[in-house]
Each structure stands twice: as structure tokens, then as C-alpha cells.
Image (tube, rainbow, N blue to C red; front, side):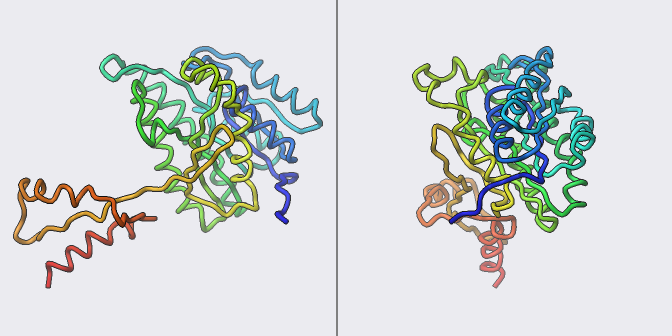
Length: 303
């Protein structure tokens, strides 16, 4: 029988927790015994304005159910203040769930700097600031769990979301590196690419599907990834509608050319089918594995 997933001695920060996915995460963490810092600036889905009531309502829900929570109304770009709030309220930080996000969708030729910069600031800089402020505390206690929220728009691309896709896939790059750096201090780092019916996706998903994509169907994965029982790190998981699966990079075996004698664009064209053939594809787990084919090619032609 699996050990129960509990968080009685743990403090969890959930950003963007005033509604949607973040609210669902915060409520489930609290039901599993965590003390939760519910962060939400309370702005619009486009990153405008602020309203303290969003985070306050979720805290009230948690307390009404017998849980322990505090509200935080800072912007995620003020991550040091946010983390200090958790330390002042609860004395420690164990889990950071970077969930806060906005949308400013436009096709690339219509996008202006404000659309690009604000999405970057909330998703990438905000997640960096909160995680960076918590990182020394996680290292010192030799324990931590960090969850980043990526997106299928970053993995696969999506029309009108160049800014959002850039930010979301960037967070997976951060996930991979922090997983390497955090491992020796028992800090595990993973990313999810969720699909949920929230105010950010309302109008983008057909109504009959929207109603079925409840945010609560994403949160069990987040809570498990944040638990002491989970040993996963550097993972990326698509999740939504009661389904979840792990995503990994795949690369063709490629084609090798003689680096001494050189090769031409015509040589590349002649081998294009082989370069793009995924039969027997490799799945590199790190930079060392990723370089194996290139190093083998260099060795082949150095003899």
C-alpha cells in the first residue's frame, strides 16, 4: 500500500492562487495538511490592476475547512517579499509552486514590447524571483520541492502566443538546470504543462469541453510531485481532464560528415531524409548523452 501523501510539517507557497489552477492546488495542499501561503496580486488575466480579495477568499475557504493558510498580495516579481511573508507566518518554506501567469495573446507582427515584456516578467522573472528567494532556505534545510508551470504552447507552439510559448518553454529549461543543481541538497524540481478550464482559458476552449476541464483534475499531480514520497526530478508532465503523461525529448540518430574534409549544403540535402528519420531515435537525458553521437562522429574521422 502506498504511503499517505501528507504535509503536516511542510509550508507550501502557491503563486497565482486566487483562482483557477492555483486555488485548486492551494485547497488540495491544505487538505493534505500543509500550511499554505496563498499568493495572488489579484490583477486581470492581462496583468493589469490588483485586488486583495482573490487571495483572501481562498484563505477563508481553507480556514473554514479547518486548514492553515495566510494570504499574500505581492507581485511575483517581488519574490523576496513573498517568501519573507511565508517565513514570518510559518517559519520555513518547503515547497514552491510557481503558478502565476497572464495572457497577452497577439500574432507576432501585431505584438508590441509591452505584450512581450509583461508576459516575460510575470512568467519567467516572477518564477525566478520567488524560487531564487526560497532557494537558500531549501538548501540549508537539505529539502525542497519546486514546481514550474509550463504549457503545451511552449512545447508545441500555438498561434498568437509567441510571448507565452517563449516564457513557458523557458521555464522548462530552468526546471532542468535547477534539478541538476538541487539534487545534492534533496531539492527536486519538476514542471507541468496543464490544461484546465480557468479564466485564462475561457473563450479559448469550446464551452462543452471547458466545463469538463476542471482545475481540480490537475492538482493531484502537483501535490504528488511536491511530496516527500516522490523521487521524480527534471520531469515535464502534460496533465488535464483526468489524464496525465510524461514528456521527453526525442532526437533522430542523424547523419555524420567528415569534419576534416568538410561538406556542403548539397551534402546536407542529400542526407536530409536520414537526418530527419526518427526510427530508433535517441532520448538524451543530459548534455553528456546529447553529445554522444557528435563525439562518435569526431572519433570516426580522426582515425
